[in-house]
Image 1 (cartoon, rainbow, N blue to C red):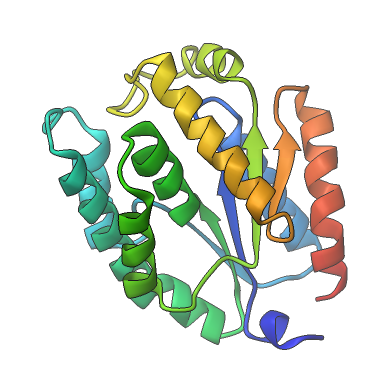
Image 2 (image 1 turned 60 degrees about the horizontal axis):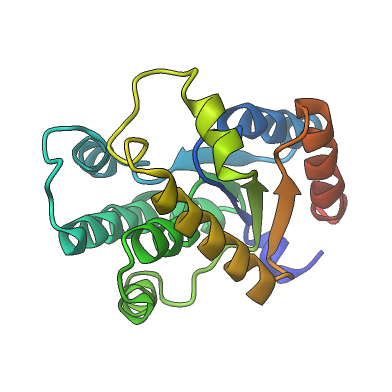
Length: 213
């Protein structure tokens, strides 16, 4: 067993709107539970009382016109609290952390979607996270039109979901470019197919990590 697993494994789930993160998060939870792995589930933005309050601001309609820089810094403010209060303590206890979105989402949504300077995001990432990075990221990927159609069948859209298709094309492109740059960490899951095949892909990727536990 390597040191990373002894200290707890940090797994993130990423993807744009409508790719099935909620359903597949439940699948991963069940997979880990069956293996007797101790883990916590959390999300971004959110995960703490402060983070959830910031989530309401970021996703709600109250501040629709907030500046892009404000949005970026609120994301990292929530993340700083999340890391300090939840993620690092859990990993240090030897628990696995399963997180619905993390910094890859910031590169995709604020860097790609909002077209903010990636170097500024990178600077905040190093400042807030230090050396902390996910051990494994599952990127659920589907064409924008597929995700948008699925998302449209759910509840009322949040502040991000109200963006136009061009925004989400940029989000997807950044996600895929990051996966290409970091194939050892980011595993692309074809989320355009039926749920059974999506989960078969996830189980295959997770198998090696679970077996090493």
